[in-house]
Image 1 (tube, each protein chain N blue to C red):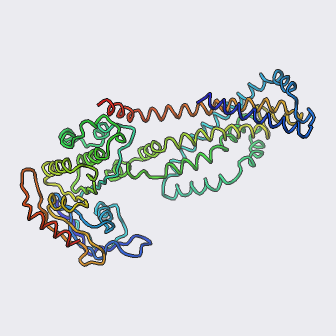
Image 2 (image 1 turned 120 degrees about the vertical axis):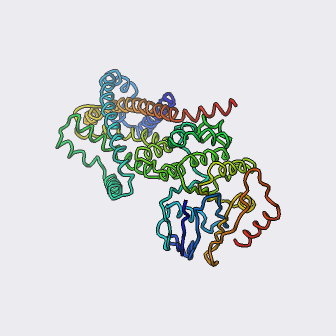
Image 3 (image 1 turned 180 degrees about the vertical axis):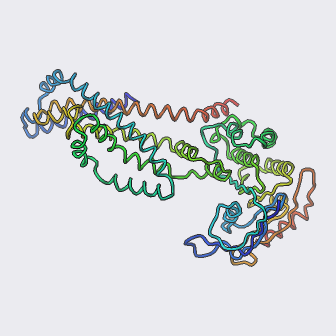
Length: 260
Length: 231
């Protein structure tokens, strides 16, 4: 899982790099616009350690923001699945708010909360929250009639059981949605750092942009890609473990059937 | 248990051109093993859902003298995947009925399924497991909507005999498309017909076969003929 993600990223990264050098060659661009390989090599030596910790910083904010947004989306999704007025209100609000680009609100957040951790965290959480929420509401409000029928008509249905049934039946969808939103959390954090924060890899990219130093940006992109791939691989592994644990009983059944 | 009387029931699905029930009058809930029979699309499942209290928006009168626990089981139901069949059955069976688990499990031939996951069972086993958990509930009337559709004939016979032996005081409404089956095993067959026919429902007496009894072939054929003519 991990090595596949890393291979894929490294492949895409070097294809991108090759494209840049092709453009440089075709249009005869100077090293100032697109740096040469020796320039990039020198930059790697100069900034790698600093950027490594910057990406680590960004990733930790993204992970915390992601976890917060998952918790919020789960809680609100559970209420939003209801067919009463609260559920309708939440669904309508979520559909309308998600249509608005959260990044556009980011400057306001920086004005109100400053350029510290809280702003980065809030923006990261907000950017991946709404797609998560819409998916969670969709999944949790879809009845699994074949299973729920018995519980509903025997008077055993509780909201916890309803959520458990629907989550279990849609476990693969949930895992895909959660893993997909991890990239959004990373994007949100980097964008927030790029706009106004004073730490993280987004901030370093902003400085590199002011210096028109593409080699620094290329190093930053490489590290961002590696760390994002790592995070996605960990999430996929966790999802795999959850699926396996939940499906353990069925696997036992499998063994029994094949053994008999 | 006192039966439920339905008088002049009218019902039409929202947006549909034709009604499902047109002045339908009938009676369900007498003790014994009864059937609901009719051609596809005539409204058997709709009627079953109405009896089970899962359908609203119909007009007419329901004479129900005492509250009843009506359960509605159908053949497509599934058990949750996170627990094994045995664990699930144990969990959903009321304390007072737990002593019946072994008897039902054994006579339904699902003892080997108890440690398995539901999705790993064959369709016939799934049908039997699902029906077993309903039989372990406290019910007055159990509607079995093709609940044994995927079970072979011999096993189905054993199961129906067992149900009759174990629950003589309870009421069952068995929905099946097999004329021979309902004619042989059911006490009364409520034949549901098109909304254009009057009356829309007719009751025909079946052979009510039990273990050890020999059904006379001629009587069975007569019942089958009556049902076919009625529907």
